[in-house]
Length: 233
Length: 179
Image (cartoon, rainbow over all chains, first blue to last red; front, side, top):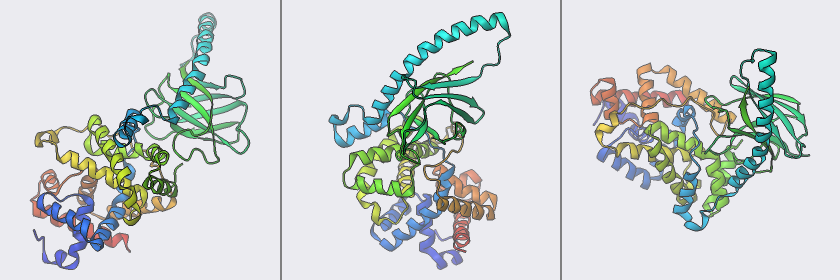
């Protein structure tokens, strides 16, 4: 087990703590070290120090939103069946889908007319992926254009309520809303997308009103004001 | 964006049995912890199982957070990584030889504080000072849950050689980080 007199003599505990934090031990060695971590506060503090030292290695691990039923199963295990009804953020999602359905029906009618005209007048332009995010009462209207690695957002009508900000969300089917960022006060803004985030055609984009700085929880906490589906062309 | 203080506050409330805080903590951190489980396990079904176990543990262990000496995300990631590694090592040996699916591209973490960024730079710089093979062994152990045996096999060296390499590398990292 010894790897040389110099290392073991100088800082045997420090090395063991590092090995525990890294997780490279197995078998009885691992069990003994784990028992020590649980019972020896000084050793446990050394292990904790090593965990912090190595923690930045986790920065490169991409976040991947789990499916919504994971939380429900956790709550079922912890709290039992009375929490099986959809929690608050999902009620916002349902409301959003209601907002968007009306807008989609209108978009289909416009698209049919547009196709008819362009066949006569000009060759079709390359399909541009965009979304029109509209409130049902017309109080908020944004035009979103999908570019490579970013979205360009133009606020055509309306603004954030006083003392609040507008936050843009992607709602892909079956996933939690993913924040695309807080909209600045300017009329046109370009929001860089997190690397690896896909915005599929047909997914919903939504705008909610949030406290300054955006939602503190990672999900919409304020009212969902407007929504629109990502379309092509 | 959820800061370190926000997450710490949520853990504190979870320790008191606050279910709304638990949901908020889940919302803020589950993507990262699920990502950690996926990175170690390379298997969606197992990762979902494990991330459930992780949040059950988080609920039950939240009252011990304050005395553990870890920053909140490190505490959460440690729970996730340990659970994923336990599940990984419970697999039958032949399953461990499966080719991993492509790892998702690196993305933003829940907290982008100045402290976290400077710690990341410091560790990256110190890893760069190591022999690239040794640095890769450290990363492999952390990100893939490799044991000394796995590392020795992967690099084609005897077990005691890998132990020496890794121990010396860890001591050099510590010395570099505390300069």
